Length: 375
Image 1 (cartoon, rainbow, N blue to C red):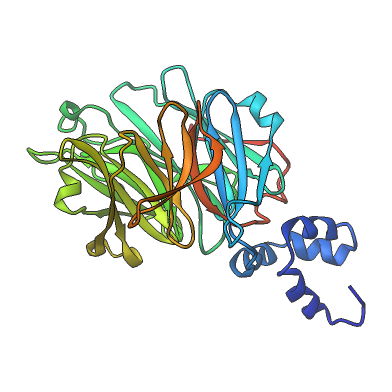
Image 2 (tube, one colour):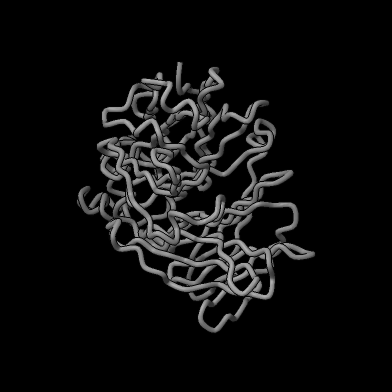
């Protein structure tokens, strides 16, 4: 940029540039490198930049598949395939944990099924950090790991919540050791949570969604005669837990019948139910973070018995995976029941679909730097 342009104006121009251009500009001058590397610029850039939103389609199977699809009028024509050979050699049987502010989190499982390693990845700039997660040795307990980026500081966080595995042990155990541990990238280490602790009767399920700095877990409350489903939220800023009640038809549905997603920044709960001897999917949405605002959006009823809602476009259209002779991803219009095939082969893969925007987060970290969560 010309020296005649005031530096403050240069800063505003750079906030509108793509991430890859900014990475190149770091080598132009020391002042630009210092600016782009500053935490204030990274935070402002993440908040303000308005580049085209993409859908990140991540396939987990015998290999890792990543694809960015422009979520605009050209959808789904503009597709970009991403490969990460170093990570593929390091990860065995990964699970997709979630996506927050342009960062993707994968976890691998140990021999006994417990999570043992988390990888936080920026697909745009091909950088990642690795967080080894300590095992829960006592068989009376299990643990769930959540991931998200703090909306105030843009600091990536991992939270490990230990809970009592068997209902018969709930009354026998007075206190859960190291019940909540938090890892922050800025601190580079794990610590106890600053906030309150979940009740010991709560059993966490392996489903989570992060929206606008709030991490949501599906959970089961075993504190009454009839156990019921609920949602437990974790504020990534205050680190406070909060219990959210579900409508009765969701709270007392059959086991494994619930999953979560998000529509723009609203939490969505998908319910698998039975209707006229066929399987249907009912989509509910919680608006503006208000627990009492759960409303039923629509019902998905297709001729195919095995259907899974994977995510949403920014215009509200559903991305659905059909499990037939050949698995496929489609756009499903709920009211007309019209289907558009995305021409993405889903055979042998479990997909996750996430809204995605470019971010500078992790660019100042050494690639594959290793940390630890837990003792």
